[in-house]
Every structure is written in structure tokens, then in C-alpha cells.
Image (cartoon, rainbow, N blue to C red; front, side, top):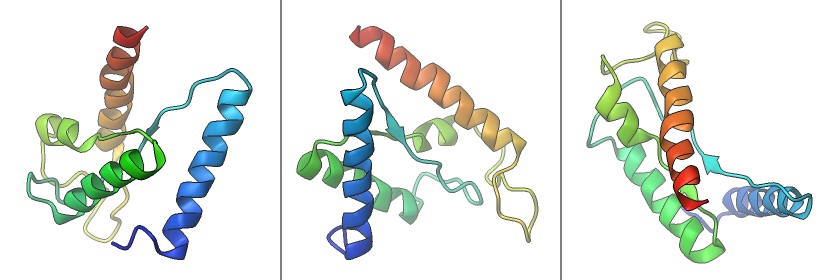
Length: 114
């Protein structure tokens, strides 16, 4: 919630360092996050927080982050994509959607900019 908290400043500085190392070596790096998959919905408050962080990172630190959540909303067959009621880790279908998002959505954007 507080993007200027010590923990968040450390994460941002780490992302910037990783980005610099990759670019210094002649590579490209792209950032995304793994969305919450235990209750996928258009009005998920956690996604709203991610959108605020993505905007903050871009505006204040020139870090671009791809947002996979709209892809999950559009393509998820169920609202819950976790292993069970007690194991909230993403299930195989969620991993498949994330892989498709990275390959299809990010890949398309990268190809169109080259």
C-alpha cells in the first residue's frame, strides 16, 4: 500500500539493478507479476493495488510492468484456479494461462515494437 515503505523501496531498487545488469550485458528484460488466482474477478481489490503500483513504478522509476490480470479474467474457465480450499497455490490451468499470457500477449507487443 505504501510504495515508499522500506520493503517496497528495496524491491524497486532491486528491479532497477537487475534491469541495469541485463541491459549492460546487451539483453532485454520484461517485468510482469503472477496474479492472485483464488478468486478471479473484475473488481478484485488486489488487482487495483497492482494497477496503482504499476503506475507508480512507471511514473516514478521508469519501470514498465505487464499486467496479466485482464488476460486471466478473459480466459479463466473458473473463478478459482488453485489446487484446493486449503492449498491456494495456482493450479496447472493457472500456470497454463500465465504461460500463454507471456507468450501471446507480451510476445505480440515485443514483436510489434521491433
